Length: 171
Image (cartoon, rainbow, N blue to C red; front, top):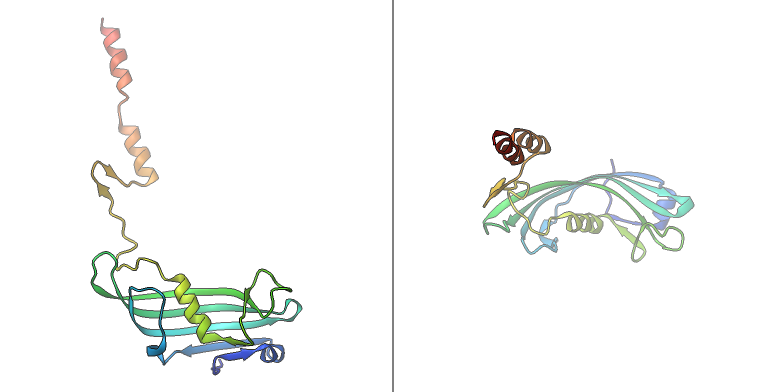
């Protein structure tokens, strides 16, 4: 595994078709994320493979980014610790004329740290919450059911039309 100064340019990629990078980012105070609910970045690391595809002049990045933040819960307003991992699988190009499906690298340098921060910004939920994956399962006159639960409840219901037919039968 290699730790760089985070800056790679086209000449670097042409000489190094494959690079494995692992780093724990240390200067966290300088990092500002776009989400206003993020109070502080506590931890960021990445473990990625960077490959240069010469035929289409593209940088392929595959790996994972792990991070921990102090954030304000969008539902309660309380501060909590938010931890997540991002699977990073993206393509970057110095020119859009060869590979129009890749992200454009602005300038001459591919700054890993800036792209890691960009990935975190892109993947952060807009409304950070400590219980964002919990859905309240009941409300006023309704409940959330699985498909099996729904079919089971429908099977147990008696069709009121049968009661009407039975009334006609009794007459």
